[in-house]
Amino acid sequence: MREINRREFIHDAALATAASGAALAGVLNAAAAPANRKMTIMLVCGAIGVSAKTQAEVNVLAHKHGFESVEARGEELARLSDGELQAVLADLKAKGLVWGAASLPVDYRGDEAKFKEGMKGFPGVAKGLERAGVKRLGTWLTPSSDSLTYLANFRQTARRLREVASVLKDHGIRFGLEYVGTQKSLVGRKYPFIHTLAETQDLIAEIGTGNVGLVLDSWHWWTAGDTEADLLAVKNEQIVSVDLNDAPAGKPREEQIDNQRELPMATGVINVGAFLNAIHRIGYDGPVRAEPFNKALNALDNDAACAATITAMKKAFALIQ
Image (cartoon, rainbow, N blue to C red):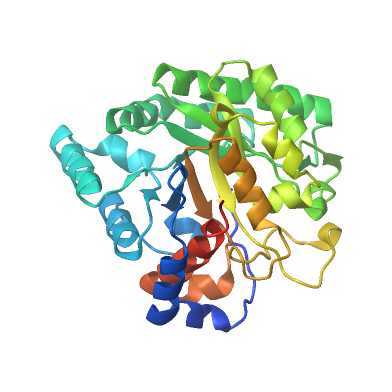
């Protein structure tokens, strides 16, 4: 989930140590992928505090540190000439990378005028993503509102996201929705809203365009009280992308704060192994990113942050059976 406000959390100083070459090599060697693993480890720079100004810079960092897929920067791709785009695609192929997912550039959560203004340029972004061969795009759902009751929020959200999804469908792009299960976020405003897998599936059915699915996050899966059985009931074609995170130790699930997360496998509070193995068993074939929005991770330089992240992700992926 791409938050508008930067998340703040002071992480254990050992995070930087995890980025050392020796630690990285050991974990990478231990994380040989099962022959039938279809999901890919995606680099999303903003989610780990990495600064990359162009798609080419994202690709370089991903290749250098062993990521398998990359975020697609939709607005940038839409601006490229045919020649520039072909150069980006050739570079992606040469580095053995594939597209992961793009993020929604339209603010559908605010007032109607802002939404309509954002939608004006969105068909051009969708066309640019299609031209580049990007097939997935996602966004997140706000779990509460100060002004809209559940039903009013549901109707407005379904209407606006149906408009977004229709544009994406015209360009062969799947649209993923991420529910926010953090309990404190649910009660942070007057009217609670969608915060579970089942409710998100209700919204997807209401949108009804046929190209809308889920963004699953281990953090929100855990904080919402969803289960391994819930994941196993989902089909691969219903999942657009996946986020992988751990939680701070020593705090009850109901007291966890959304902007205080850990890299996967940092504490073991969230059963990352059960989460990953469930989506592996249903044949999930899309991107998986780390999304801790972690202050100590953000403070590292680009290479150190990428190294720490791929170490954590490979350690988690080693649990896949």
